[in-house]
Image 1 (spheres, rainbow, N blue to C red):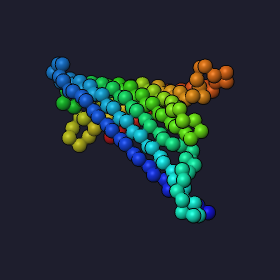
Image 2 (image 1 turned 30 degrees about the vertical axis):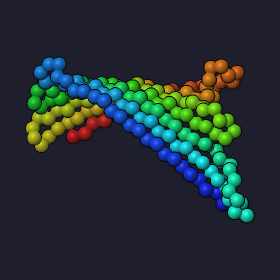
Image 3 (image 1 turned 120 degrees about the vertical axis):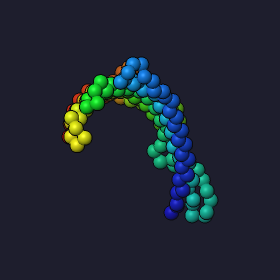
Image 4 (image 1 turned 90 degrees about the horizontal axis):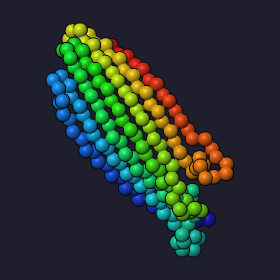
Length: 168
């Protein structure tokens, strides 16, 4: 018999830097950069029957980390009181790091996406509106299993997602 204690240290950091400016009447442009970092570090101790504490098996993961970079640009255009249009581009890249007991070298996986969004709102009076929205997302992931140097390669995950919605 033994009991295992898991100690988890969690670190999260996030920051955003951005600006909004008006290059011409009825138009504004917003640009921002978002950064996130997170770390989950696990330490396992095992208590034996005699009460001794020994370094226990680290289960499957010793630590997980992620780093995300997200530049975003949005243009809003409102030529009339009753009509507004916007376009947004975002680049999302996240890098994941994983350590295990068996392989203490950090394994890296990544996610990258180009996200294009556009929307229009028609408001003929104070109680009626129609909004149409479209988004196209090109996303892909890459893991050590899809490494180009390995003799057996697993394919990359690629996704092209189209989203369309309306509301009124």
